[in-house]
Image (cartoon, rainbow over all chains, first blue to last red):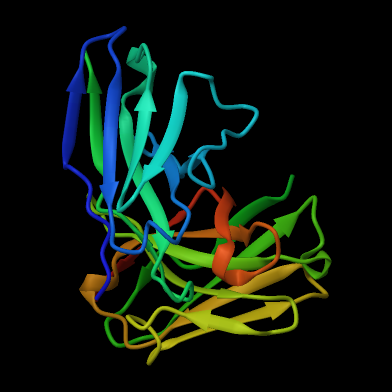
Length: 108
Length: 123
């Protein structure tokens, strides 16, 4: 079955750039999306359609999609960005929705 | 934008059927978009269960297709999840969310989400 693969963890110091990847065979044809989930909270959309950012999300969050890999980049990461991040997309048919396994971002 | 709130029992016995309801406010379900359910077992990742349109059209994940039913009540601006034959593996936080975008189900994404409700399966 189709999968989206993320690294389990990423760690950066405050002010550094954090990059979280998501790989999947259908990503060349399907958009990627990214969610931030802080402890005890519901997921929050931070990137949609590969590169677009909701108006309430800080500009330091950006996304890209190249071939079979999508990347969430957090420039000048802040302690408040510590969270689990999930990529989301669909299989090539579009009818099976799935999330990556999640990446725990540590900023300290 | 729409606001969503899950409701239902926090404890379900093994083999029983889970019933959850999502109440949507600040947006009429009949105005469009799909509406979906996603769950998250403790300490684990997110898993799509299924989605419904206001006309009752549904899409289900193959992982749940044999035991899931999602329905909609437009008069109450609610949609519901039923998951049968519950086991301990179904213990999770269950979220409802707007499954929207530009109209085509295949191009939609989940936003916003309800706060989630923890369902524990135990005798």
